Length: 94
Image (cartoon, rainbow, N blue to C red):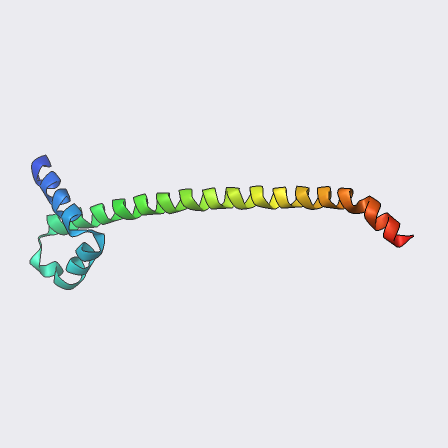
């Protein structure tokens, strides 16, 4: 069992290394690290991936919302344009 202090120390080291570098180290030099270190690194990487996915989902939802708003606004503007131009078009047709 690892102590809470060791876990915090490892997580600080993971933060300093960064997710990409940590992945490379685990991929190429896993035998150099103990099982507890490797497990803690994998858990930390999964947490970082979950945070990144949540941020991307939030961004996607914002973009989707604004795209829908823009689409609705353009339809309303097109209808208003047709209504405004109808008297002129009617005169051209005659």
